[in-house]
Image (cartoon, rainbow, N blue to C red; front, side, top):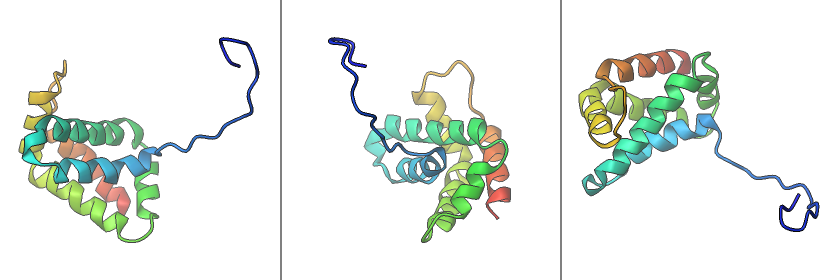
Length: 122
């Protein structure tokens, strides 16, 4: 319903990114952004961490990514290994430096969500 004239409009479908799609997208973005955009790299890393931590508790997102077409599953695994396992200190440091969080994100937090996701990715 239009709040101005109270007219009822036709139903509209809006395609939004699904949580599973956000994982490879955010991991890739965090890795690919130039060093001059550290704050956005931190934001992408935090977004990926948050989705993995809060929305993949049951493994449904890992299952969806595993079924994705092309080389998305293997690329997601590679991005996750680099950003959250091999370079967890850098990623956590960047997130904590730029995101003004009330709770510090530790490298161990990144390890935990990455290992859980990768175990389920297959």
